[in-house]
Image (tube, one colour):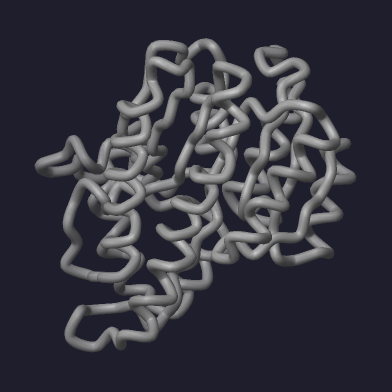
Length: 257
């Protein structure tokens, strides 16, 4: 494994599982000091031990806890180079606009979009002082495409992340701070497995539209994060970095042989 991130400090939200966990391992393997942030102390401490980094318990919808998260990271390592704002939810009560309640709508937007606002607001001043930094915000391919099997709040929340990331990338580009949206396709994570285990038809309807014929692995998304965090992507900012197995480029997908 290359050491593109040697000595850099990466703060990762939602680090306890799925994409966040895989990314913590990947960035650590490339030399980064990992600050794992999650609400689950058990998994958070486990990933901190596994990566040789630290764990900070934080509810990313709470501005004080978010500010403390970066404060602890800076006090420990003296710098913050990478912010991977990845925490998110996709609850079962988020469905069609005709059946999704206001509570589900507001809960999803708070966790998926407001948290990214709070994280960017808190971390950018640290990066301004350093004159550099890379922020990667987890959006989704659904921010680009519509779906008839709707998760209306999730889709809207990720659209907000995409637009916010674009604007921040433009605003802070001349200060050496890059901000990009990472838009994965369906990823083989516990969250996806739980969702699709409950609805096989919904899973099948998604899988048929993926040209590569499979869901992504979390390690493949982590590799994309490592690229966006590194100097290999030094001229990429305000971008929608799609890692979706070809979904957004497909009119029809190949037939199985």
